[in-house]
Image 1 (cartoon, one colour):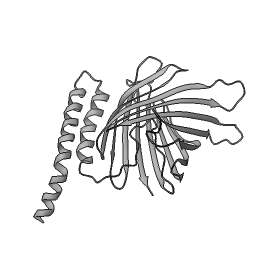
Image 2 (cartoon, helix red, strand yellow):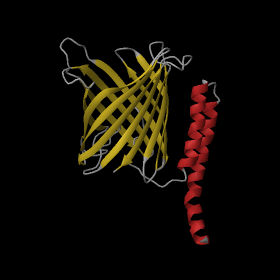
Image 3 (cartoon, helix red, strand yellow):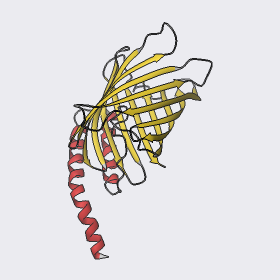
Image 4 (tube, helix red, strand yellow):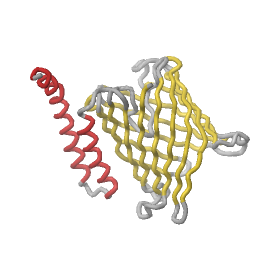
Length: 275
């Protein structure tokens, strides 16, 4: 029993040093005149880091919540993912918000090509009413080009069709060019996004998502992420954390609006469970 405990302590101690450094960094950031919502998020990160440090590993997960990386599901692999998104237009009016719930089933056709289907629901709250409704479905595929480090930037193609559930309407197309690079424990990913309703005469929207993250150990990644819409001139920036266990992975991110056209706060949680 004593040998077993000593072995576990030996495995945990190196991790504790890295977690301690991350916690000190988060404490510093959380007191730098951050809004209460952001400061609260940083405090939540401290709790997540402490809890995650006691779990076992599962490395096949997302480092970001809005940005895609150079990653596809392996051949024959399957996963269920849950997305919870909060959109808060005005932080002074907390009762006016949208909560979006997405369920995704993902399957790896080959090691470089996967496909998934989403079912979407929205809970919309206004000052005088509240409604919960089915918000349609999405079908998407990702194609990973080449192998990691084969090119200066690792490329991936993302294609998606979405419909609000009314099959008499043409729906919407979304395409993403994903460029990423991992150097040591540091990852950079950029998504150039084109979104267009499948209707004549409708202009396409141009968006982006990008992230920079650092892997403290295989369990824990911390990063910063930005997303935006060049067409509508909405831009966001905020922190992201991801941690993994042998049973599931989870990623959390919060983004603050950077101009008056943007919502005040967007928050997203991703939960992935391999099948």
